[in-house]
Image 1: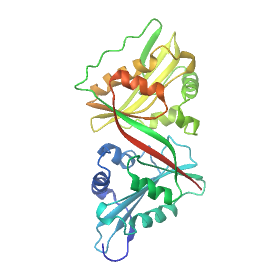
Image 2: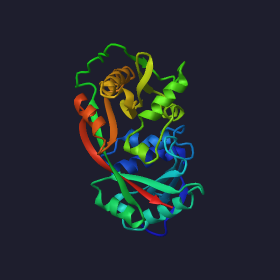
Image 3: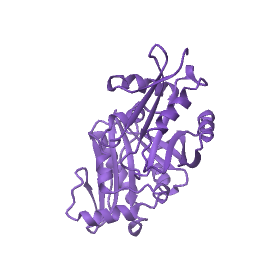
Image 4: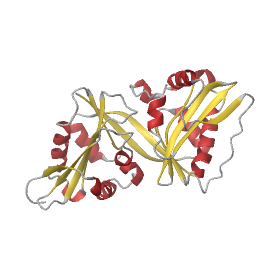
Length: 298
């Protein structure tokens, strides 16, 4: 690198090249996951993209800042990725400073996620004032090689397509969703409502609602991108737990996703969320990378 770092707004036409840059730096991350903030404007409506360039205009790094709809408005997700050839040259610091200047006044905490085994990135985030608040485990299921049994609901249990998020008993479903959120993310303040989940579905949503004797009891929601099902949320009302509803919901979601062209399914759960991780193991999910979620209070 020669000369000072120039920060400019990212252009839509260069998004594929920016995705390439991030994928080269974080090879374990699926391309669809990297591209998600750009490819899902309904989920990240306030996305800011900054590109660090050398004197020739070549991208050396990319920074992103947004508040996804599933997060509280007082949070902001911040991310700065530097090409390996430019590491240690001040590009990351320049991107971080540029993004900080764009943080809204009503934001009281910043969030960032990095590979837990990427010691360099964890250390840099710590230097910038971030602390690890959670480690998440990523798991994946091959939907082609793995036999996919059809769910077998017991007496009184019905699974219904919920992709339209239109329910005659909307308030009851909303109350069930709220009650189901006892996961570590919700305890930390990341509580979603039905509108949040609907916006997260993208162009190929997958959503299944479980009812027990007519009452809403559980829900799973995800989306299919690049032939992969990304499961955003699975929850069961505590009053209906212990009857295998989460397993049934995911089994149906797998079948629905295959019908949309998915060949694999990926999910992400807090390492201490033993309940859903046990369900994933029973379904045949294979544990992959660990992700460190860090926070900086402003």
